[in-house]
Image 1 (cartoon, rainbow, N blue to C red):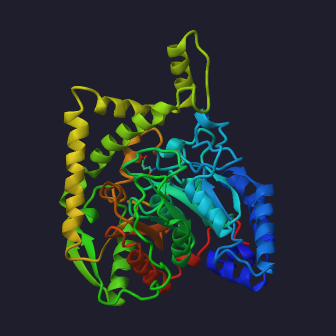
Image 2 (image 1 turned 180 degrees about the horizontal axis):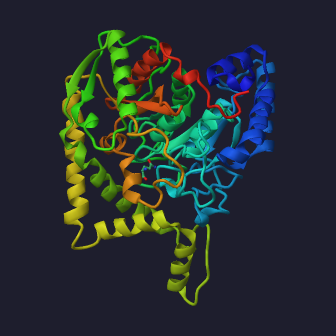
Image 3 (image 1 turned 90 degrees about the horizontal axis):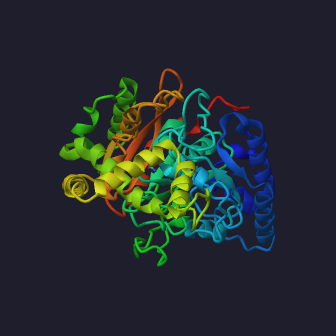
Length: 489
Ligand code: GLN
């Protein structure tokens, strides 16, 4: 067993005791990147020198007895949506291919303060629009469990890097499932916190009423530790809430005895559910029942409208957020014979097909004459979806469901059929529309040896309980310890 087989917290303890150094940990990660990333293609940029310098600084802090915390010296990666001073931030887009931010975003600053060397920037669907990482302008990332399949998206590079043990943990973002779905497809743990829990200052915006930053890790305690590092109120993000984060590790081993877990009827009836996923999720809920939880059927009657609602609201907000890529302020500029021609050529060459599709959908939904019929209606339905959860949480402590209706699908299988791709998100979208915390953790493997994810949705600000439920399941199963066949040696 090498250092990269350790969890973040295990490595942190060994760094604290001096049994291992951060430089050794970074070198072990870099060796795996060299060996595996030519095939997985999780990284857009590896920052060898930067990571080694940060590791040396961590090792010096420890010899002086000044460790910054439990994760000091533990190498991590960042989805390439996080602004990083001195390193390119592409958002997976040609339009930002050579953009270098003049500052670190808040979550990145908090990681640096916690002492975690940043190994590099990870691939993603362009502007986080997608569910397979195939919409990256650069290349698709592959799933370490089976290189013919997708690791999911849009934080597919982060998920693949964590699963292949090239980093110990990573940050992703989740607007409609982009942390949880790739976590499910790669057998890792991913958490989308409550809207407002983590600052988005210095994160490229996709759909501002839905976007949230969160941790992607190999197990649940690591997820708690990484969340702890970034869950800090930030006045620089007007949607960051002044709600103090509890100690997420304090009660994580408390178990589920006496908890009421809701099983939404509508979720298991949705079309397109893979029977193997259904069976694994049902087995997981029975396991939680055995551990002392009470399973309670609940109804979320507006679930069937979530997909349509999301695909109006998210593109509408995206069309507005992406107006800033005009060839003047950021990134790519393609000259034209006048200003309008320059805008047109810049945006035509800078954006990929899916991004253009979203801008067109969003602009249409917001345009005079259609606004009431589409955007306003979607906002009203969003309120109904939110209300479904308010009602369910009157009787249950958390809601359990599959994360994704299928395990990893083949690269190329859905990319030409946007609707099939969007259907991936049926279980993850309602949580964003309602602003709730949601976590995915591995709960099984298909006959084809591909991971299956279990989703746990909590009340607003109740991440601690979500983590506790996830940990109870994880402790009695070993799915999180299985590693992908790739480079297992
Ligand atoms: N797959 C969804 C989309 O394409 C969600 C993406 C996300 O969460 N960033 O919009």
